[in-house]
Length: 586
DNA sequence: TCGCTTT
Image 1 (cartoon, rainbow, N blue to C red):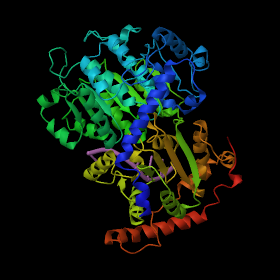
Image 2 (image 1 turned 135 degrees about the vertical axis):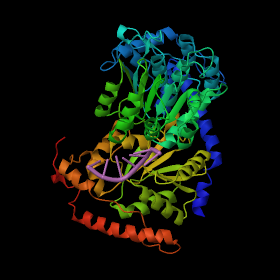
Image 3 (image 1 turned 90 degrees about the horizontal axis):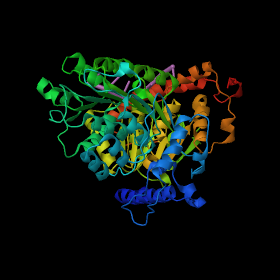
Image 4 (image 1 turned 135 degrees about the horizontal axis):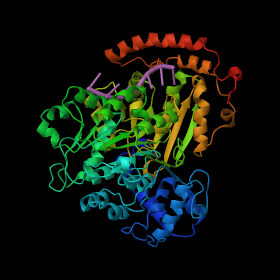
């Protein structure tokens, strides 16, 4: 009952309120953008995310009470061009007009980097964007480009002319620029590749205005079904009003393309890699007409499990003038090397500091001793006021299922679960409830960590400690999107010692406080980490409550119970994790 | 590291 009262503040009303907040933030930012001097209070409250609007030439014209005056576009451009060229080590006059101490700098690297564009209108003029695309942009609220959009879209719509070998004489066109784009979570990367892709394709296949060749013309790859579906939805928005054929690739849609004539009408395929590889190998899909290949969540797509599949797809794209682009919020050095080797004469764009989350996500670390203490801690958390929907991450599928069950049994309302062990339909239903705001607590695995954009998510809880800095950044990046504020809580136990310091450094870098003692922790030796990795976590079961469970749960509990005991024994045999003798090699 | 994702 109490929980219900707490939660009744959330739900449907919530979205409206949030949206209003967003509009206010948006206006606030626009004012500060065009004004020369800002009251400090306004500045400090401005989410850095909105700082992207520095690229906009004016304020939002439709919104009342907004200051429309702006600096001359030329003046702005000069300053930022200068910053582009000398990005790594200098701050000059551009710094002076920065309203925030920590702003998102954009750094670019590459040959003949195309100029960025401050507005969508400027992009329209430079690249003849169709009025159809412009209409859909404004219809869906894309009024001002974010940093990655300002830079990425012009790059993807530009041609490489410095190297004559890249000129494709057959198609009488120049090679479009390849791009590696790194921009924080929730900063509009999807539009950064979809818009230029559709602009470059020009019109749906078969249209008399263009030479569409025969076969699919663009492919977007994403690591999960859910993300592919979300990208598909975005793409449909941009396509609205014309007869684009945009396919979210699945077994079912693949079957509808058995006939080559049907395939020839396809403009864009959005898919997970393995699904596409399956069709390639069965000969029911050709990629020889693909002109644009996009890897979203590129570092994930290039890690060991996906790499071969992606390479096979890339190899199947046989057009010499294919444009490739990779996007991610994180790109560790090894993944970047692989990415750069795939790309031809690439431009590299980095927005903000690489591998640093948005400062508008308030992050904290919560010590919870051991695994058994986690559930009580989480229940305590939910006994206090919170802002649904909350996203809770666990390390394994069984833990996600069992934690969700425990929360339900403990009376937490509207708990949902999502992991890749569930059926396609179960997953789709869970996403649908989440989108409708019916889920207040969503327990999930790493499958939800990347790319998913639930605008209402204000709180993320890492119930199980993330096993990499990248995982941490992506998980907490489910909140704090598009300029909203967010909160991220990370539970850690003694077992998590080996990774604690690296995550703590991420908090520190992005402006969240960290207890001094954590920062003083020595960096554990490799051997120690190896040992820690062997500790298996059991399913989450509350031994105090045994009544009212169905047989399936009981059965699984018996199985998992023995696993749990084993894990416990093993854990006992481990040395104390945080002991200083672990040795420092930092 | 591992488990996570992909049919």
